[in-house]
Amino acid sequence: MESLIINATAECPSVNLNGDSGIFNISGKSYPENVNDFYKPVFDYFEQYKKAPKSKTVIEFNWVYYNTATSKIIVKIIQVLKELKNHGNEVEIKWYCKKDYELMIEKGEEMKEVLDIDFNIVLI
Amino acid sequence: MYSKYTHLKDQKTSLSYLGVISDNITDKFISLGEYYLANSSQLGKLKNKVSFLIAECFQNTVRHGDRELSGANHKDFFQINVWEDGVVLSSCNLVQKNYVAELQKKFEFVNSLGSDGLKKLHDEVMRNEGFSSKGGAGLGLIDMARKSGLPLRFNFNPIENNLAQFFLALETAGKKDAPAESKISGDMQKELAFYNDLVQQKVMLLYKGDFSKEVTLPLIEMLDHNLVDSKNISSKDAKTIITIIEILQNISKHAKAFDGVKPGIFSISDLDGSPAIEGGNFVEEKEVPAFKAAIETIKGLSLEETISLYKQRLANPEITPEGNSGLGLIEIARNSSMQFTYSFSQTPDQQTFFSIKIIM
Image 1 (tube, rainbow over the protein chains, first blue to last red):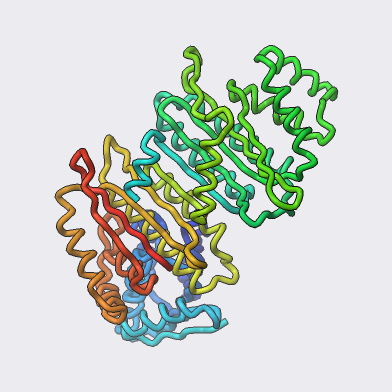
Image 2 (image 1 turned 120 degrees about the vertical axis):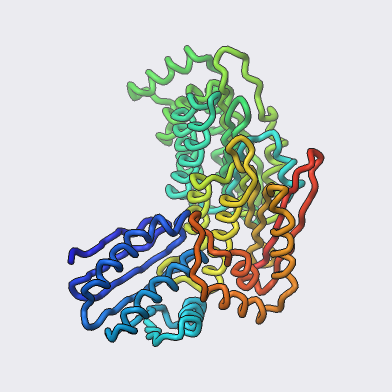
């Protein structure tokens, strides 16, 4: 499966979705004017991936910051992973943040609570 | 915010920036200027001229200003004002007092020349017969005067430690055939007073104009560049920039449009060491009751209740086709620890103007 790679811009994160390895990474800032437009290829990619997922899927988030619309996109992405998990696939969510970046740690904890899913907050 | 908005009512667009002036800031000014002029039937032809003047005005601050200098009550300043019939660019930077007489002489000399004289001088300088010992005052200055087509306005304001503030205003008019009426007072006292007001109120950025996405994105980038160290971001800075984004995108998406333009106002200033973010825009009458109810509800909550509401809404990943999350106001409230005030003003022409002020 060909990877989806989108380079970061001022308002959009870098995206690297590698269906062959099952490792997905989204990093940077995210405040596009319309999140639906920017993240459409990401969800399209997941739809394809879900047809033949790897036994283990890892998603890594490494945010500088994001707007509220992106927070709902993150929820939607994690819900896709929950679906995979419900179908018996191993899923790991890695939420990278600097150890003194309290806001992003808090946002990770909040996602974990809201989505009721194992969440690995990786302090760097 | 409505009084600030009406104060700038004659300017179609006004962007004032006080802080470190870098290439990045200049680029954002150019892209905002170009966007505005490209969308103006009367001023569209000024687009390239204004881009050139912005770059040249910036070059001027670099060339003549001393980047190492700093004054207690000084802030480097850059402003673009777009009027119905022309554009004014203003800047302020510090120079050492001992350069003032020389600079003044050069500006007066350039202003004394007509277009033919300027062309002749330009050709002479091109042949390396320039009059500038510093290398900069020659071509740049002449080009500014030639492109502007109106006298260069300047003022030197002596401050402490052998320093002077150097104010420069470049003006260009939209109508070539009509005698241009200057928007700048001859001695620049009006402009200086406006600058001093901004410094006193510790304003970093004040923008009045259309809030389309073509405008909000460069504004966000400009503020991000100034407020955020992406490699070492602090929680406070992140909360500030996220709040700015939510405010600007809210205005951009929800403000009432008049002939395709969504007029509004935005500022960020320093209030006793904390950023104060203010926004204002017109609201569609039919949307006022629901909007009022929503913001009143949030205002009535404690911080804990607001966080709880946030989590509740976050669990529902619904996003409108326009990309709205329904979380913006809640995020603003919690980021500011509920330190926000708002008002709905009725304007003389029966419009509703919404203002919000957030202390971070």
